[in-house]
Length: 596
Image (tube, rainbow, N blue to C red):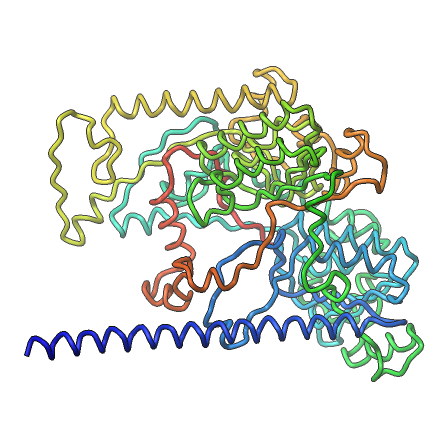
């Protein structure tokens, strides 16, 4: 009997392992086949590039900052639903290549509802403007035009709209989710320690509505950003100054028929999408059914050129994108980024560094670690510049402020020099679910900090001192890096966010410019001749698909995660989870989304 039991157990064990091996083999075969298909596809795309081609820029979906070693959704892989994400870097590189490529006759922009932040959209718009310097025509079309689509497409020589389409141009707005009501229902309370009148990142967790200082700073910020956007649209569309705002104030734009938009010079013609092929045919000298449209990836290749890692004349571009933390999976994981900075500092082949920052901040500890590593890089005497993306605020500014020169897009959001502490108390939640924590300790603060009771007055006082020390450290770092007095920094700090145009005036940034501008500046400071250096991207991007499949890093599908909290706003739930799992001391800007 016992023998039979062990035999059955062994056979089940062996059967399970055989099944697992077969599954892995099938997965590997699928991956290999998928990679082969990608290679064949990229090969066919490259072969399709010929004389009189049209570069088609599809404005749809999310545009990310750059490629990342993201986790792989193996279910989508098996179903063949893996799509290479659009990145700002790849699109800008494609437009740069198309500008010089003799096989590209025309740039065609198809507007399908792009999703990107202000500085990303502006950087792409500037890349289109640079393409136009080639003398090649730029055409744009949309069934409907969002503000982001229109901002980019307004650079076109000819801009078309569907006769039944609309122009959704209504300015900028931002939404911040105030979650006190949610946390009250959950039984979670927060104790807040902060420095700075405008350091409003904690407000969504402790208030039901926006405070006066928070609203005032955002009113100014949005106003400055929109003024830039409206003025640039007016310039490229040759409108009278202020005309765009006049039309928006009258409410004409959102509901106006397309033909009225032509009369106001906001678009050039109303046509149906099928007519685009005929227009492109006339421009390229071929029949309408023979127009050769090519994608940006046709010009950049299946894998974007990241530079030569063996070059002895490197200008390193190091990406720091996302929230700053010290945990695996974080956007900017200091435990990974710090060694990367040290390696670049010690590498004799690296002659200078551009840190590309696109971050709203995060952990004070993580920001400090990255800042110290950058100080070490500077100690080598190599030039160091920062290029700011959509955001370089709070912790994002902490890691930026000591650069030799700071470049920012005109629509970058920066500043937010301040620190806060956010300590959750989940005793109410524990009580609701029938959990009654019982603690035994040798000293009054042995369990400090704990989620199950608030801090007492003495602990709160110590926490306040810690936050104030961190704020003074932040102020001192900015003053040293920007060559200002601490009093000067304090007047523009207080946790306030600034648009880059204002930040330039108050000395938080040095120059409005692109990532390419920053790289050129570093190369010049390193005494390197133009075109005699290699721009090399770090961290090295590796698509380690098989390793990700076989590791424990594959996360639950999003659909399953959402099913676990029926009836609740998923973004609010994720934000709650993030708050409850982060360090108490944070250098983070207010979590708001600009609707563009």
